[in-house]
Image (tube, rainbow, N blue to C red; front, top):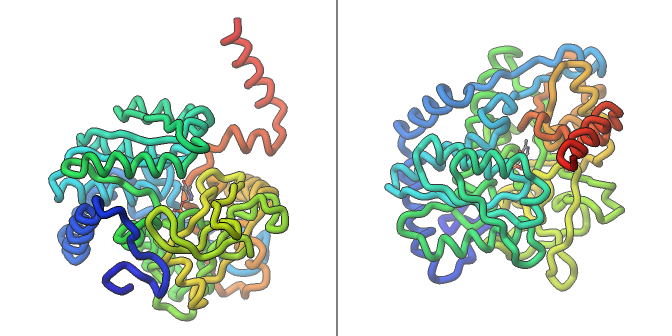
Length: 409
Ligand SMILES: *Cc1c(COP(=O)(O)O)cnc(C)c1O
């Protein structure tokens, strides 16, 4: 990375003049803590006492036997507080906000998971918290809206544009412009203008640091491959960071293949031909856009992967060939989730199940003395509405109908 936040041609900070000073202040504050071993110790201690770190590395013995190839290990980010790796990023930024002396945080959220994580962090640190959410998403994600409000956050439905995530991002930036003095914008993934991609990766790299130590202790050797799902790219960058300099470890990022790459209904920016390099939302990367630069509709069964852009660092690592990218379809994801549940008693999030799909495809061809790691970025409890429908569970259907009838009565 050069000092303007570029990874070859990707990244940068394309900002309105009024936000430049705020980003400079943030970049300077982050640079100071990045090189401060005491800050990292404070961060590790916070995560150890509040969020189950270090998270375990679980050997999936039954799945290993089932596929008959490499030994399959699962990095258990699902055991974090609030159920996913998102806790690593928000708690890290929470500590940074304290250092900067600010008292209010804002965030945007699509599916609501990042909003819940941010509201949790704000409650813990005692910050005021406002969460911007497209009006359509507010309607779709009632359980997360409920929890954000219980945690003390003000949830603002955004009525502009198509009333989804990108409109919420614009509104959050507008808020930041008027409240820069006391407010920090907690971006949720390794995207956006510099220094966010680097900063979010830094906090998430705790996953990879732990995983490398854990696999060396267990196997006495490095894994052949590491798999992670790719939405914005933060859990992938987090686990990949631990193995980036180990050339023998192949890094595999798995995007949302939706109804298939040929269908156009997917969110695959790095392994479909539907994406092009462009500048939007303050940074340069591959975006799913048409020839006129209009952002396209995306689709995934996993709300957390349903995003038009991707980390500029991953765009760079695609072009250098350091990371291989694949896509998993909605159907493959549901099948892999069912297998992980039945064989191991693990309930991966729909997002995480994308990584499981690709690992399951490749495990049989690897030797039994080799190991692979799948990053289970989150837990699937949140997905019960989607998964129970996909499994066509009759008891669930009756439950929903009965519940609705209670309210009508
Ligand atoms: C939000 C989310 C993702 C996608 O975000 P990344 O920044 O790509 O990691 C993946 N898995 C889970 C469980 C999530 O909640």
